[in-house]
Length: 193
Image (cartoon, rainbow, N blue to C red; front, side, top):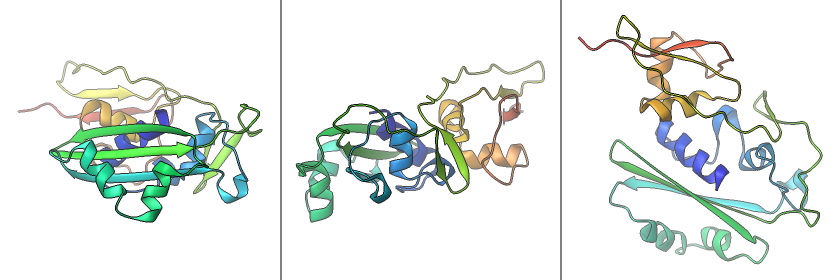
């Protein structure tokens, strides 16, 4: 559920329907980073599959499932005997809905793979590190909303929490990439005049 919800939140924050997550992470990267005991050959991605979909807010979950049942690869994600666990995520932003289902099979040992980090597009993600919750900041004396980044927080998670886009935050802070670090102070909103 954690990885599926995070991917639907990421898609909603970026407006992209994609299997690639924050920092260029793959679905396998995200499962391992969450501490999921992924079974199978990890060099081949393990036993996992992900279905994604987006549409206007009136697109129901049943309609998404019906669409996925319309072709073999998406249907296999939902019905394969090799995939024994499922998590679902849904996010709604600006009149659009984003659906994700993540299906996988855990290792027989039930323990996460031995790994200290997962590398995706040059970004190391500490294994078993959960995202830190976002505590929303109130406007300061100038009326601006500024968020101080805490360890484990991501730009897309901050954008979702404040109901803004990643691009809005990057523009307000003259950022050219998605890298943020604990202690960074990000301008989220300027005072409304």
